[in-house]
Image (cartoon, each protein chain N blue to C red):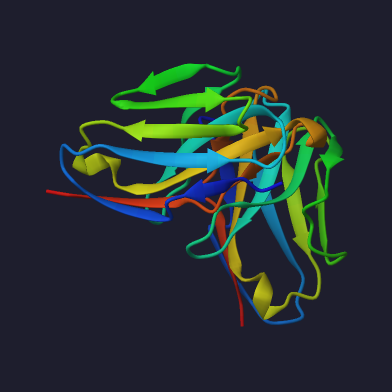
Length: 113
Length: 111
């Protein structure tokens, strides 16, 4: 695709429910990042993939959060038993390599009610 | 490992200059600068890979002092379109390829 695509753009869910957020990176980009951004804050690192493997998942806040990238392209961020504190914009970015420009998607705004 | 940005906010008149600083407590591989407008995704400005490197994008330039583990972004002769929040992202030598962002600097350019 022309850019990083994230779906859905908005998601409202009830506390305790399970959600999946999808990221479709730019074709050929091997590096993929997930971030969480709260209002007025910088993007908070969650997890980084190089190819299919999670190279660094040190930013995942707890075991309710999990991400996969099974074929080295599309990635899914999964959140179990959602809490109100999970409400934020979840951003995905991809890049060709480690020291090249990272392109961000428009984000998924998650609201847990 | 999150870089620290200063100032947190700056208000400018069109045509004025400003400097945004980004510092790290750890040795850096690289510094990445992004600008984000309200409700939009961050947009890449530039990457600095080597100590002493300087780059420019329009009238926005940046420098990287590897020894001091810091970078500065210079907004010269600011335009209304420069308004937004500027983030620096850093790759720390001790943390591989993880790209971590600072808290941002909000810039408002007034006519």
